[in-house]
Length: 181
Image 1: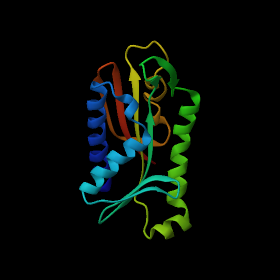
Image 2: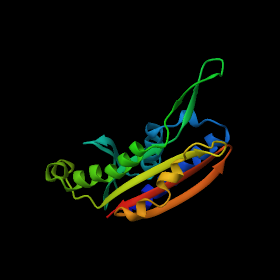
Image 3: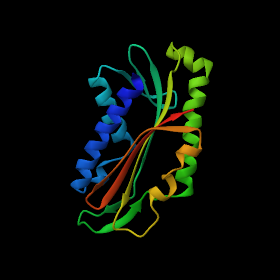
Image 4: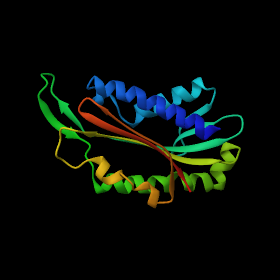
């Protein structure tokens, strides 16, 4: 049940992102904003939520189950001056991002198996999940996140639970939820 609620919350957050991309407002988004939207939706569904608990991005608990969730949000944004002049680029697809994604499952799996953390939480961890959104520009010839993450997860002890892509303005956004096995 909790995995379904997290999937629904992720879909809702993704819908808000697509609305913002259609208004060319990618610069408003980062991993913290994603966490906020997912947490808000889970709370509306009467799920107990803890953010950044013992190095786990999000812990969600309903009446029957608990999930540890690692969040990843990747995008490339152009920082502009007050006059609208581009001055810097923040975030780019790279091997470092890819390595971070691969290591992210270790964080949540290790936490879910850590006896001390599980005792602190007070119950067993039923699901270990990774929620990832990445945004590529359609008007750029530079490297794209989709080049790195396209089919990667299926080969790395992760089961894809949900996947969706949408074009919005000059962007293509992809949203995925993985169960770490």
